[in-house]
Image 1: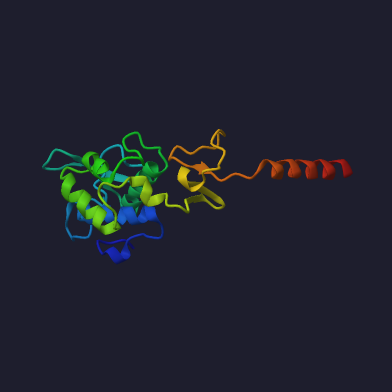
Image 2: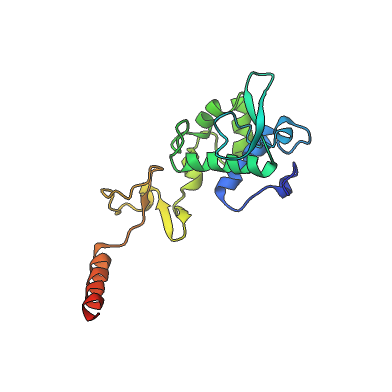
Length: 193
């Protein structure tokens, strides 16, 4: 069960690490805070529901319309999906090429405090690229056996294929000879049937 206690918060990958840092910056760890009361650890606004159940929308004193999620689990899942969309380049507002400071300017009202809190929690510079946190030299595994590499990690990669990922890297691919050998083996097996 998720509570305002950070020990109960989801974890396990770098997206969750960012979600946890944002939740601290938004005060989700403070009993009775807006983030706690609204089950909204990321201070998400209308449009960020990501299919999660909501109770309604609350207009805050600064005029922001925040989502009140039906449960803390729903709020955390919506935040995870929002951050995942940024990482993979599917966000229409944010890009993995933006710095943490640029993300903060769009994400938070008090962007200076927000970016310092989030960057400190993650051990990154506020001026470093958001995507660099996820796409280190080893890349990021987006599915079992599918790793997205940053361009500098695989300089010999075939970048002219349609297997490019919008987050800035390439999907590791098998050499052409492997495909030819597999096709030949398949033909031999087919001919024997």
